[in-house]
Length: 242
Image 1 (cartoon, rainbow, N blue to C red):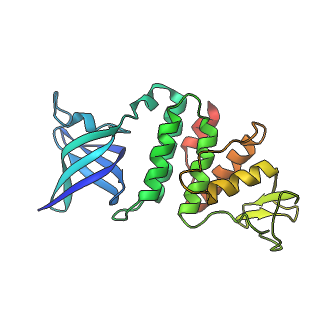
Image 2: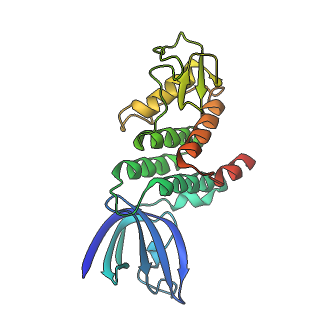
Image 3: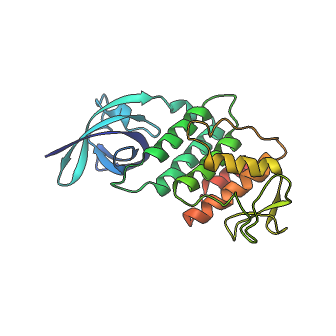
């Protein structure tokens, strides 16, 4: 019988049998994991506190017939405040969706988990801009996956780039161009993309950008992460409607 101790967050809940739930966890140690939470629908169930979306904690499981069964859970961070506001709920749900797309089963996912949990923590802060946090999550995820956009030379003519160039972003060529193709971007947008993709992980959130440039950065980040993921993230449509 195998025992597991996993640090992670609940990203999906599936109803199972009369009193049970299946929790999909995103974890540092084993990537995406499904565990059965037995009896958590019953009133007063000992582990009902852990069978909630955004529950972030340390999960203890025992494996029976190759299926982990939840036996204990201790909260590490309270993210339930994210559900109090429809806007933060949508953004937080999108963050989970993106990370769940890239985290695979049985693969340690420390870099992505740190990005996710730091993004959720900052999203709860009233002084954090959810649009900018989304841009950071999108472009940093591409970097973690080894698919960061090219920012050090033109993707069309291979000329080294600097702030004196007339810059554009080419989704087709996966990076920045100085050949007057793609969507035109300012030096601030160029610097932001470069910072997000290349800075030390402890510094990626130390970023400011003019409000006039943020919508451009956001649009590019959304299109780029969907290209990398090979899918459309539906929650982005709901965010657009807010």
